Image (cartoon, rainbow, N blue to C red; front, side, top):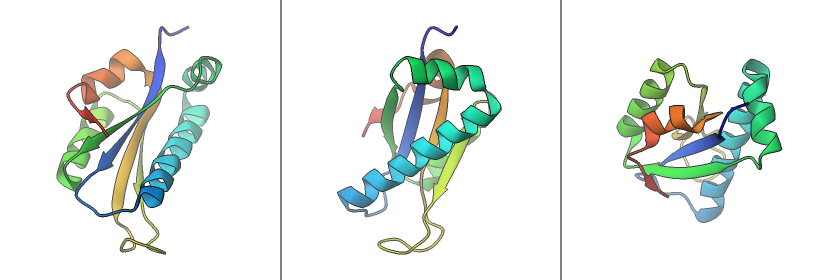
Length: 119
């Protein structure tokens, strides 16, 4: 059993998205991240599901900062997914909007995202 499992979604703030679009991108990240962890670290997923599915949404200024966070998470072997928009509404096809890290142990994720601000 793990003390705390959480998922963190990190969103770019340099692209214009309506609130609904932003919410949809965060939802895509949450679902994709959960599915990845369910398939690869089932014990983390099960603990996360049993304890309320904690999610935190944080922000970065641009794609470069987002990719730095992603790389740092990958270097710690944390599960990461990237959301690239299909371009059907507000954004150009392939626009990277956000990433999800986890669900994974909170102390591991905090090493990557502990300095970021809440969205």
